Image (cartoon, rainbow, N blue to C red; front, side, top):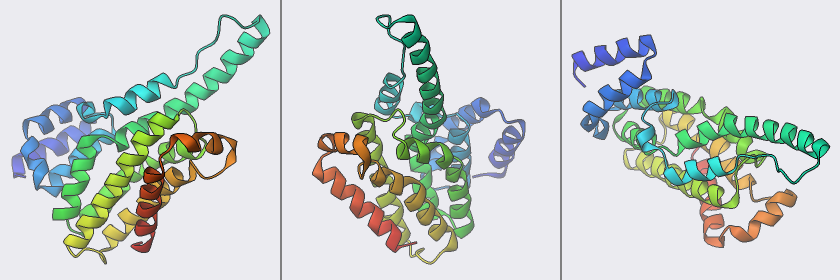
Amino acid sequence: MDEMLTKQLAEIEARKNYLEMENVINRNIDFMETDPDFCIYVIKCVVNGGLTCGNNDDVVYELEKSKKTGSNDLTLTDTILGKMFNKKSNEQLASGAGSVIKLTNANLISAIRTIVIYGNSERIDQASKLMATLYPGFTPMLNKKIGIGARAYRLVAQTMCEVGKMIMDNVKLTNKVNFPGAKNLIGAFATEVMKPVADYIRGGIIGWFTDPDISNELKENIKDTYQKLLSMK
């Protein structure tokens, strides 16, 4: 990335104008293939609500569909209680849905891949810390099964398995297994992403009922990805 573009992105970040950052990134998108410094800005932009063109439309649709609404068939008392419950559910859903959507954003995933392949330990660690800002929303949403139905879960779980394996494969291929930044990225992803993905179908009444909707192939993929990530921490 040339000095002028670096300066431009830094100035935009200082103003926190992520719509402008999105426009600059899109005009210079070719840098995302090989430039880890550029990709740090891509991740910053996604984390702060930009580059929504990379959102997984199916994930967005399923999460939107999960919103609760009151029923006109209920009594006044039930309606009031129902609305209170739905309001709380929707607040919890909103707090986690943004993180889920961002973690499945194609631009963020591509940026992580480039940083792992071409970045040094410092850049990989920087990417890990940026991703970690999304975990406080993602982790409880999966753990508490808030707003994640079986179909949305399948989409998210499959994508997270692909991301986890992509990270591991490229860390190995580029001989960065012992890089502190790579270990931090892998450790956090295992603990804050793959563990709650795995826990979703492990216990409790809701987990038992959703179990038949999750294929054995996906379950094995989740287990395999999680265990391999743990072995590389």
